[in-house]
Amino acid sequence: MSLQRAQSLAMVCAMLWLVTVSSAFGQAAPQGSEVINTVREKLLAGEVVIGGQMTTTDPAIARAMFGSGLDFIWVENQHSPYTYETLANIFMHTRGLPAIPLIRINEFTEDAAARPLDIGGLGVIFAMTNTRADAEQAVRICKFPPEGIRSTGGGQDRTVWGNSVRNNDNIMVSVMIETPEGVKNIDEILSVPGIDLLFIGNTDLGRFSGLSSSDPQYLAMVDTILAACKRHNVPVGRMCGNNPDTINGYIDQGYQFLCAGGESGFIRSGVQSMLEGIEK
Image (cartoon, rainbow, N blue to C red; front, side):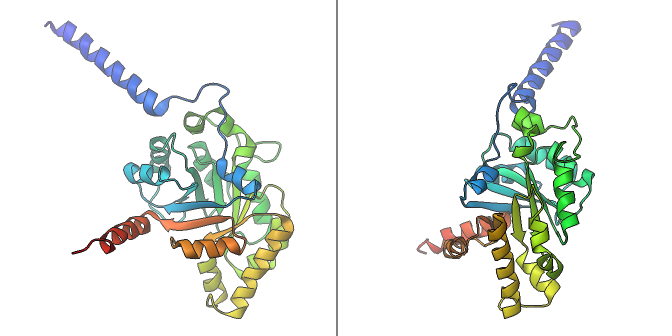
């Protein structure tokens, strides 16, 4: 085979490989296709959603989490080693799987919210929401005009989800109450249009208040949040662990959005469950 022919064959093989990769990971959904944020829709319908939290940068574990049957995956961008590049890689590798990706951040800036959305997130969870101004800013930086100020970029979100991802109704805006100040301002926070979910950061609420989770004052703060969510018709969520009895108890209390823990906990409990059933 001549050198020229060999080079031509190599070029053809490279082009075929690129087409295969593009078909698997990089091709946008057809024009006009609709992708619905099923978590937001279920919450609006009064249904309960169960999800998990993820800090891994491993695409294989991410695919297992996103395809496990959970409603959502809480991608932990506040306490994790993620970069925007690794997040983009995770979203591309989990393309087509049913769980909805939601990203927690701890900044109320346009850049901090828009970039995770531009690479494929369908919602932002804002840590440490303490005031009405925080809640207003959360909505403003997640929504396109006229509801907000989010600019239209050339990110991979449409590659992952299709054109309808640019619809404001597909983006969830969630706020976290983790301090006594947030509890004090709960009615003002929940009165902001565009808040889809309020999440109680139960561990930090105890730490910032200096109260144990069994203290009557702590329980009173939780009751205040639950009552306010009911008044404002905003779904409420919390961490719940992966014990079904515990989860059912929280559902009975009115929680609609329950995060059952992270990937390491699911792996550990799965292995332990298997070992406990083996007769040695």
